[in-house]
Image (tube, rainbow, N blue to C red; front, side, top):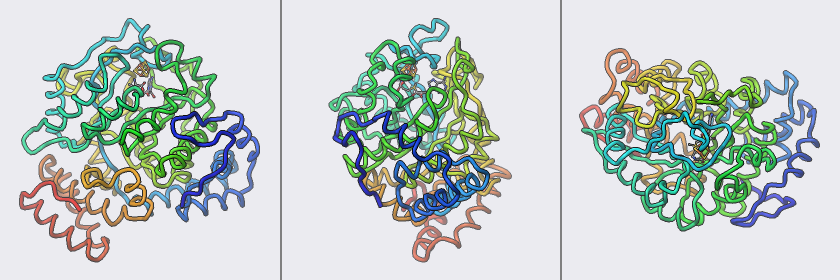
Length: 473
Ligand code: SAM
Ligand code: SF4
């Protein structure tokens, strides 16, 4: 399904691969595409082929109402066909806000004197994890500023501690990381702690814009960041997460560059990104987001639909930076993972009774709903909240996961596992109407599972009802 393509800069592991002129030329060469061109590109996506950069540019450049409708319908169909109605749920855990960089868009930037600088102690991290595990969370992403204190050994130590922490039956089964790029040796140290995904956003793939917003500190090195995922993969981290901070450069250029980065990883390692993220700039202390070019909701919707079509196998993450109503709407165009019950203050889960204080946050949160509220919303719209971590625990990562996801196996394994982990959530953490409605949804969906899988799922669901835990396929 992946055909290597020829680019001006050949793909070599550890070497830069973005040619801005080439990307701009592809965008310019596909302006004002016809609905027929759009239909052809969309047809390839629906056949689960990875789109070429030219095909992706056709979709990005399509503006007529008919063409745009074709794109949204196809993205929604692909989402349903490949991912089913399952949405993976996780939470971010901010470990420390110290930072030596000065990214103009971030509340943690070194020159921002109003930010409260804090790094959690081991005991404090444990308390945060106990609080999160006590609400039913199973997947966390640990978030760090960039500082010598947050060394590979430190990051690895924190990941190990999170895995070891328990709250009654609650425990975290997958620890992902969002932190600065590391050397290959550094990534190896972190890999040994058994982390899931290592996420690094390029922020912008446009070198000029990049230089403007990253004036000082190690992050000013565009190429070191661009090649970080190569080093992570060389170090044995199978699952990497790409991302762009929308509101810095031209959004069409950024989406095409994300696909170019995907092609680079596929060409060099035979495996693309596990996830793609597309945060939009939010207000922060001493920061007015109006000083950055806004990406409006209509363009944002299109970014998601086009990424869904261009890279069908990658998980797409939509965070609580976006308001609840918009998140609920955008899920249908391709989102497969959301955070829930999110608190961004360092220490915010176990302290301050859930209040929000901007000086302690990297940026302002838009969707402050609790995990229970998000889960209820998902169930009401017919989605199955999934706390599944089976692939990672069964070694179905990286290349294995790509084959797994692209072969249409998500419905065979991920859907029953979503039902099983959701059933556990209902038994341990839900009450009243959510409990009833949740089990009704599970019972409604079980008959549609494939023969063979259905019987196993039914047996395991009976076990969960009877008190069995950690059941998965
Ligand atoms: N310090 C590491 C780094 O920069 O790679 C870790 C990530 S940082 C804590 C997490 C991400 O938040 C950044 O990569 C950036 O995309 C995003 N971010 C920064 N400022 C933001 C803002 N004002 N609004 C929304 N997202 C923001
Ligand atoms: Fe530091 Fe990351 Fe914020 Fe930049 S985005 S100031 S590196 S925490």
